[in-house]
Image 1 (cartoon, rainbow, N blue to C red):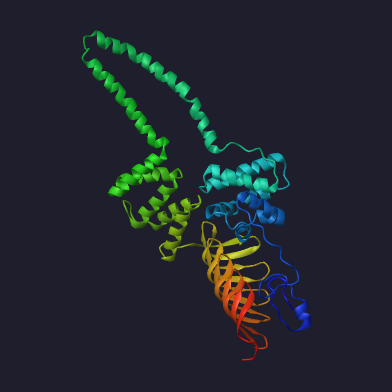
Image 2: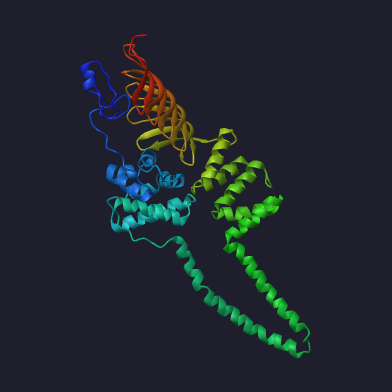
Length: 420
């Protein structure tokens, strides 16, 4: 039999060969040509495509196995943002109202945005990704202005009453000034003008840090460069609590190294996770390195992922570290996970007891490995689930095919078929 996709051939019992629906080399149906994939360059188009191809259950599920394949050029930050819709419970609000009324759908949107903002994702970013999901689902939702615009409206209206109060204060302050001038204390008049100017200057200077967190960040950086941690820590804490990512990472560094504060890995992890939940990649790498060093332990727990059950290390609500994933079909994967994906060393056992053991990357068999199927045993290089590189295949009769493989196809024959 010959696979129409990878063009690999094999032989054996006619009944067994004719019943094969999955090629042992490329994993596709050997009798059906796989369509050429179409790739998307942004999350909005990718989500629409996923809904069209797979439906609402997949769109609102864990997209780690779909998004990288359909939109490989999307940035890591955007991918993490899409995954957060499921990981932070926002997709649950959509699922519960797929057949709801317009009012119920609008309420679901607000719940979804709230869930993401509670996970320390910036409100305007949370709102954008939620609307991309509603567009994919075909919901007709009237889009609210970005939260930043909503917040800025009261600020434009409040100066009017404030200015009246200040005018009234100026009017009440004028008579004493006149009395002072009348009581022959004219030399102090120029001094009082200067003194009057100073408080207003101090007020505007004091208001700048509150209105401009970047100014506070610059000031904190200056203190950090001078080693004045006692002055830097309060500023960092203030703006980090308000979602300033750079301040969160800097604060984590202080707690990790014990700079200006007692060394505390729990607080280090807390600030890194807050930054990571906003899509910051640097904080995730920092956290991952500390975990590998054993300084920050992962949480142990159980997760239900689609219809599959995960047991093991959990970080930020996703598998990360060592774990075991039991599939609803009966298969089992046990090994390393990195941010929800099989990455590192692991063993994948299928329901028919065939298995693969070796390297994984981004959820795929990539690197060195051994695959045992009813056709035989392959040992060698893999790339994205396919035989790729140097390898040796021994069929069930002991015949050997060894040499170079490219994307599942045997290219270089270093040892002709023959018994050992």
